[in-house]
Image (cartoon, rainbow, N blue to C red; front, top):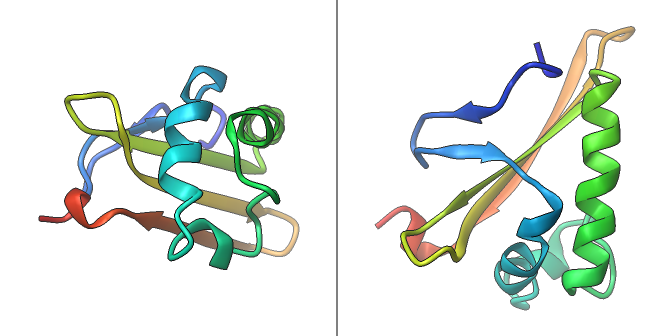
Amino acid sequence: MIRRAELVNGRIAGARLAQPADAAALAALLSHESIGTRIYTMPSPINAQTMQRFIGAHLEERARGEDILLASFNAMGEATAYSDVQVWLGWSIANFGGACGLAAVE
């Protein structure tokens, strides 16, 4: 299922698979001190280069069926939210993480 997922609709509609080209937009959202620096899975420092590696690693994990990294954007192309779902099939457990800017839920 994770290998085929491309987008998710829900409270923050239109979340789609994060791509390397999204690195700068995600870095802009997540580099805010009240968001990304508090999330233990985020690279440090958070910038476009580290986010590109972060996204690339998640795409590799997705190919193995272990993880999916989704991102949402506004009409101006700014990242408004991200969701990270890690799955350990052998243990039948998952870890859900994510964050959103206030504009994403207004």
